[in-house]
Image 1 (spheres, helix red, strand yellow):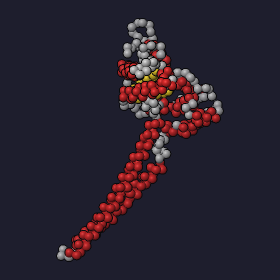
Image 2 (cartoon, rainbow, N blue to C red):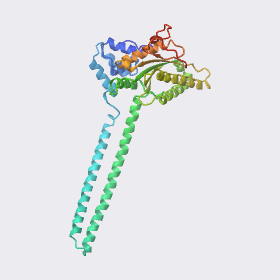
Image 3 (cartoon, rainbow, N blue to C red):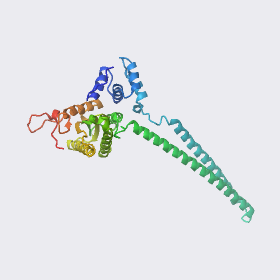
Image 4 (cartoon, rainbow, N blue to C red):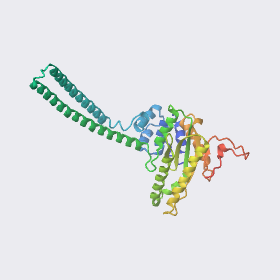
Length: 357
């Protein structure tokens, strides 16, 4: 195994490693190889290395089913299956008992009706006896109904608790803690949904972002400032992106934003607001930390319609991001943009358009 790359194009290195091993690049294989190369999952890395040089697609699927179960429909419900099954059985028992009680009550009412129809109107004793019988059956049914409703209510509360546990587990599985944005796992899943879902791939733009200077916040004395920036920036991005859109923390200093729209004016507006938010948060930090590092966001953009698979779209956006690093003003670069009609000789597929922030 090669050592973990320490380069900005780490995702490209993941893709290259998969291709070298003759493995198909898919959301599953990409995330698995990323976990292996990054060392984020030591147990997975150890098992992968143990496979040797000849790793097959079957090996990848086996490891993915164990370490990346979300790709195969598993969730926290699996760990709660036994309890959930017990509660469902409890529902069935409660409803079955309630049905039996109602059937018995209906039988008493039918018998009482027959007795009333046959009884002599002058026989008050027989009438009183029939009424007492119905009264006792009604009281018993009331108790049975109350018992059933209590049981159903208790089981509903238990199921709600199970659902809450599942929701929390799912959110934590796909959420980056410091920013509360989606993590790389969530990003890979969303990319898979875009290219393999029913709605088609048209209409989306992937924005890759690199925040230059963020590594300076790794100093111990700036730990609180770093946490503050990440929380504030993540909160801003969550409010900015709605519906089908989303923000994802891919690992310092890279983020990804998937927006629903391909118009450069709209996409540029998104990057402008992210740029402004970065400056505003750093400005707030400097009120208490005068030496807070200057942060600059760089943005590479690529439309989903120009790619046939997630790795291709990611590659397009990364190409644009690398070019955007040449721009000091943080102007976004759009992959595949046409050359300027102004005749200045610049190929904007490489250099991007000048934007004022």
